[in-house]
Length: 475
Ligand code: SAM
Ligand code: SF4
Ligand code: F3S
Image (tube, rainbow, N blue to C red; front, top):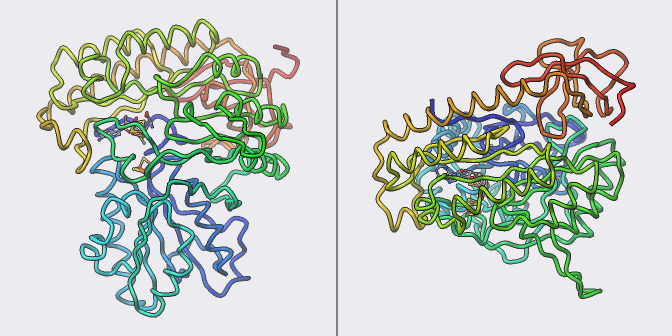
C-alpha cells in the first residue's frame, strides 16, 4: 500500500491512460499518434491541447500503439513512484522501436521538464523531449525526428496559456470536461516539484475560458472543471477595459453561461480562497458545493517547514468558515505522511486535524523527496520508510471511517445527479455524481447521459451511494 486514491477526477488517480480516437476519425489521416497520460488533471488537459496541435499537423489519433507513427507519453514527476511507472512504460515502447525503426517516441510533461536533455542520454531510444510550455514546437520537432535528429524543447514561458487552442477531447464521456484557467505555480511548497516543472503562474484570458465553456455546452457537455494549481490566485487583466478579473468573478461568469452547465474547480490553496469565492459558490446553484482544500499536515511546525504559509488554526478557521457559509459543502484534502522531521506528535496532529475536518474525500501520500526542491536542499528525508508507511496507513484508516460515515449520512437524502453514463457493474443502471462529488448509482428508467435527475439515496457502499429516481422532489 503506497497511497490512497479516492477519486478518478483527481490527479495521480489517472495513471497511464491512453485514449480512444474519439472525434478524430482514423481513416482520414496518413499519420497517427498515440498518447498516454500520467499525473494530474492539468496534465490530462494538456494532452488534449497536444492532440489539437497534432491534429492541425495532419495526425489522427489511435488507441493502438501498433498503428501509431508517433508514441507520446505525457509524464508526471510529483513522486518517485510516478516517474518509475513512466520509465517502466518506456521500456515497453523501446522494444517496439527495435522492430519499427521509423517509430518516433516522445516524452512530454513534467518529467521531460525536470530531466531535460538528460532524458535522451538516459533513454537512448527517445526521440523528442518536450516540456509543458513548448507543445507548439511539436510539429517541427517531429519533423526533425523523422529526419533522424533528436529534439528537446523544455523552455518554460511566462505567458503561454494555449488560450487560442481548442482542445480535442480525449477519452471523453461527452458530459464532463476539464478547462485549464491558468498554468504554473508561484508557491514554493518545499516538498513540491511543480514550480520547477511548470514554471511561473499565469492566468488565461477570461474570454477564451468562457468561449471554451460555451462551445462545450453547445457540444452537449454539462460539467466543466476549472483547473489550476492554485485557482484562487487567478488574476487576468483585461487590457481593453483595464479591469482585472478575479477567480470569484471568473466563477460567476462561467456559472452565468447556463444553469444547465455545472461548474467545479480545483485546486484551492487554503491561504488564497476568499469569502468572495464562497459567496459566489453559494449564490449559484450550478456551482458545485464542493471544495478541494489540501492541508498537507495537521502540525503547524511541519506546515511551516513545508512553506504552506498557514497554520493548523488558520486552516481549521477556513474549514469552519466554509461550513458556516455553505453547510452542505463537500470538502476534500491532500495529506503527506512522514515529511522531513515529522515526529509522532506531528503525526497525531495530522490525525486530530482529520478527525476535526471529517473529509468527504482524501488523497493521502507518504513523502517522496524530489530532487531540486527546497526540502531536498534544506532538510534530511529522515523519517524511515516503514514509519512513513505506518503513518500513512493510520491516516488511510481514519479517513475510511469518516468517508463511510459521510456516505451513511446521505442515506435518506435526495440529490440532483448529473448522469455520466451507464454504471460500471450493471447496464440497467446509470452512474453520475452529486454536487459533493460522490458517485451515485440508480436504475436507468427513461434517463440518459447528460440528464439531471433527482435521486433519493436508499443505501451506500464505502465508495458509492445507491438510490432511486425521485422526479417529483423539489429542492
Ligand atoms: N496545487 C495543489 C496544492 O497546493 O494543494 C496540489 C498539487 S500536487 C499536484 C498534488 C498533491 O501531491 C499535493 O497536494 C501533495 O499532497 C502531493 N505531493 C506533492 N509533492 C509531494 C511529494 N514530494 N511527496 C508526496 N506527496 C507529494
Ligand atoms: Fe506544489 Fe504548493 Fe504549488 Fe500546489 S501550491 S503545486 S503543492 S508548490
Ligand atoms: Fe501534475 Fe505531476 Fe506535473 S501532478 S503538474 S503532472 S508533476
